[in-house]
Image (cartoon, rainbow, N blue to C red; front, side, top):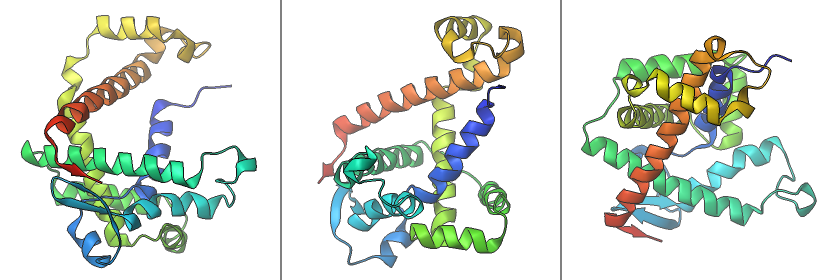
Length: 220
């Protein structure tokens, strides 16, 4: 069976993330929920329980019972704890991006948002998904903007230009199990490069988060 391309897997994950991840620092979002309980503050920016709840409402609406013991999944409490951790880390990176002057144009945001919208069979389907996730179109667009900003930040940490043939061959050699039966190094070079950059940028972001935590004012 032909192995799915990195691009397909990446956009599947991005599509889900755009619907369930919460842009914790979005001012408009916070104003819409002024009475929600504050569960954390990151350098003065508030993360509310509503932010955390909304990260689990969508998957729960799609698969009722996923948090049941019989389902073998983590409890909702554990998922909420992980979502809070992710929201804090996301906010640290967004704040760092702003400090570094990293931003994306409105045209880029609009283009990405439009591409997301047309990926659904109809406007009604998108509206149904948003309703299930407790999200508005405006909030979704803010998430798109934040995701693009985070992508720009991680790309700045590990630029495409830093990738060499030697690095890709070393990566391929140490991850051969990923590519068994999929093709030769030459045939898979573009996918290997994408995988290498994804892993390298994830590692760089994790290191940056650890560094930012040392001086951050995080209150729970």
